[in-house]
Structures are given as C-alpha cells and as structure tokens.
Length: 203
Image (tube, rainbow, N blue to C red):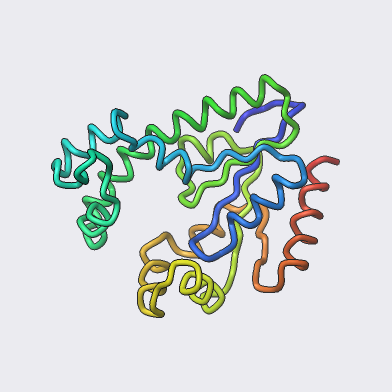
C-alpha cells in the first residue's frame, strides 16, 4: 500500500462478465485516472518486447504468427488445461505488467492525481495489492456473467461457463475486497453505487 495524503490508489477487480471494466469507465467519467492492466498485458507482448522473447523461449516460436506477433489463440490453447504452463505464462507476463503499472502509479502520484484506479482482472500481489489503498471487487451472479460473456464474446453457453470457471473463484475475489460492488441490476443502479463509493473515498 502506498501512503500518500493527496492521492488514493484504488484497485478494481472481478471475473469476466462481472462488469469490472464498466465500473472503471464510470470512475473515469468521475475524474479518476484508470490504469488498465489488460491493455498493458497486450502491450508487453508486442514484437521486440522482452516478455514476448521469454514466451517464445518457453513455449516455442510457433506461438508467433507470420508477422512475428503473438498468436493468442494458439498460446491459450496450449496452456488452457495445464496449470503448470498457465502458471509459467502468467509469471512471465505479470512481472512486466507489474513493473509498468508501478511506473504509471508513481507518475500519477507525482502529479498528485486524486484517484488512481488500477483495473486488473487478476489481482496479483505485486503491481496491484501492494499498491492499492483500497480494493473493490465487482460481483455478479453466474447467470448474469454467462449471459454477458455469451453476448460480448459470441460464445456458446458451455464456452462461457468454461471461461468463467478457468478464472479464480468468487470467494477468492471477495476475500481481498474492502468493498464489493454489486452488478446484478441495471446500469442506473450500478452507477449510483459506484458514485456513492467514489464520493465516500473523497471525503
């Protein structure tokens, strides 16, 4: 946790389909600066980046496409049902993501940004939990999440359930939360809850 009287570092997390990104978007509208771990995780595996070099050393050059870019579907298929390989993949990517997140947070602290949001689907210890003054977990019931994932990702019911269950459990997400944001209702209800919690932080 970073102690800084003029800034609040807020972690937003939650599983796929929970509405985590929607909550971050509302916070951005309210004036927070959002650091998106998903965006950073895509940037660190671009051609020429060290993370991509490590991935090819570990998993082979056939995870690249004809243009030298990461073939995400091929890599995902390789690690999906192998916890050991998934752990290796995450450890490689997360260390670079954590480094950039820390740099971005430090930059915003120097600017005395009032609320700095780290939006991260995987609440890693370094680069997330160690930086946050407070963590919000966005929670939604399984049926809601499945419906959202099916529509957004053009998946079948079985594919959506499989994707959700491949992530950490609701209990794990809830165990790290200082605040739980319930996203089982409509957008208006969610916005009111987020606004209420945001202005609580500023008091």
